[in-house]
Length: 378
Image 1 (cartoon, rainbow, N blue to C red):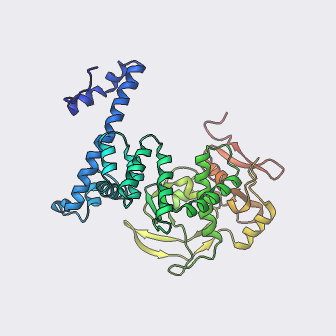
Image 2 (cartoon, rainbow, N blue to C red):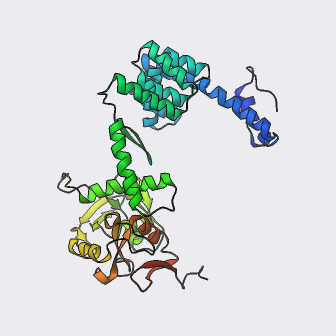
Image 3 (cartoon, helix red, strand yellow):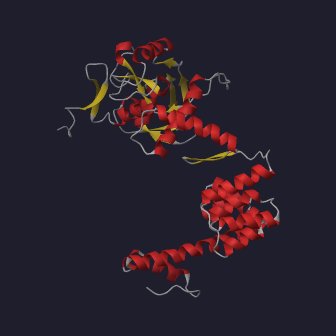
């Protein structure tokens, strides 16, 4: 492989990064080549941020009729608008922080570190220089903590809490106190869900979902358009009645699997909406609840916690499941056909329903057993 130099073109560099070219390198040469490129990236980021700041400051995006720089970047670069908006904010802050801009251009700071330092955009030149000097040898997490400390000491009443939903990702910037509340609640919920076999980040994700679900289902929430906050899932009757496959649409416009939709329908209010063509409403039936509140209380009183074999997840983290599915198998909605299953195992049951049935061990505990009529059955 040729040595990368200042005269290397982008096409030449791309050729050096081809699978065949990289395969020809031994591990030491590969590590040194990667290190060289990693050292270049901050300098490229410095140029990118400088250009974005100029586009924003001069409103150059208007030449293409865009309403703002974030929309223009999302369009031209194929980015999500939320990501583009944060990049514009970082670029504008870095443009006002010469020490940060110089650190990026020299390759001494990464873009991630610059984004953290940008939160101290109104720091004095001396404070900025001190933060940059510390950031050069610190990890990104350490830089974030240094900036947090600076904000606490200089802007104790800062109100900069934000939450962004980016596709399936959740990005939040919270005050130290708010973050402690969230972390404590999420950790406590995760500890009670009996999902210790999962990696800790996955357990925390389930804990966060559990906290939100518990609030929606139990808190005295305000009503909107006549009803309490509700997760709405739209699916056709064939998908609802099937054992596997299909998909369903949420009110947000995003899609979930048919398995997840059938799981949600186990213990949900169901409204019939008949449409024609693309989505022309023809008939809206009355809402019918598959499990009454009284039945749900009786199931919780009887089962106490998740009935899946070996699981002790508490009742608040569970759902009432039809052992014989009420639509597909004409399963009755009575106490003998209902069981309390935690969210984790409820998902597992529905995703395994093609090849397995949920059966009683004989002692009230449930487990999945392979269906003998399935082609893959042993």
